[in-house]
Length: 184
Image (cartoon, rainbow, N blue to C red; front, side):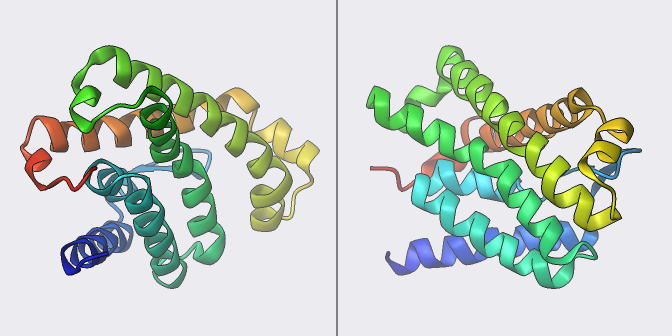
């Protein structure tokens, strides 16, 4: 890592934490926020590759642990939910030997986003039922399933994931942040 990358990771992590503190977004009736906290995490992927996504999302989650009312549980769930949003595009990039400019193509964006949303659902549904909701509310997984059907968890996470990914994509490709990318 050079100082340019370290500074970029720090800035994106700080922006993410600021978004958590201010908490711009929409609180759903089921307790999940549709927010902008993880947009810098996906931006880090577009700017620095998979390592950027990993470092910034991990730092962001660590900071969120200390500044969010939901503490470590909210930070962990945000990290788990957002992981596919940069990891899947990174895997698509590697398996197809793509360059960053290839993510301008609708077919690549659609493939990456669809696979990321599916993986996000596979991760967030059981993690909510068997981990987060029982810790947060004290409910059993069965009670959680009655209150919050799987399709609500999937839908909210799909909306959140599509929103985060597309905003990050727009910032990179339509608002000129592409020029700062360090992809190899």
